[in-house]
Image 1: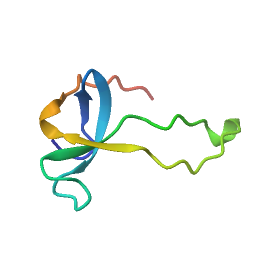
Image 2: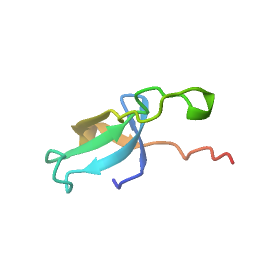
Image 3: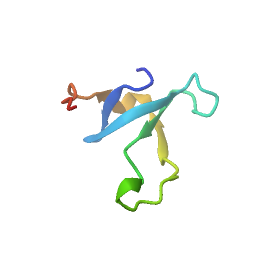
Length: 72
C-alpha cells in the first residue's frame, strides 16, 4: 500500500493517509480516512477548519479499491 491509495475496508471506501513507516501508525497497520467528518463548502456557509477523523486498522483487512471515476 502507499499514501493516497484508495482501498476498501469491510466494504467501505477509504484513502490511505498513513503507513506503519510513519511514527504515529502502529506496526502492521495503516491509517485510513473515510471522508469524516461531513463538511460543507465555506462558500455555502460551512465553517471550515474541520479536523479529519483518521482510523488505524490492520493492513491485512484492506484491499485495493476499484479504479476511481474521475470528474473535472
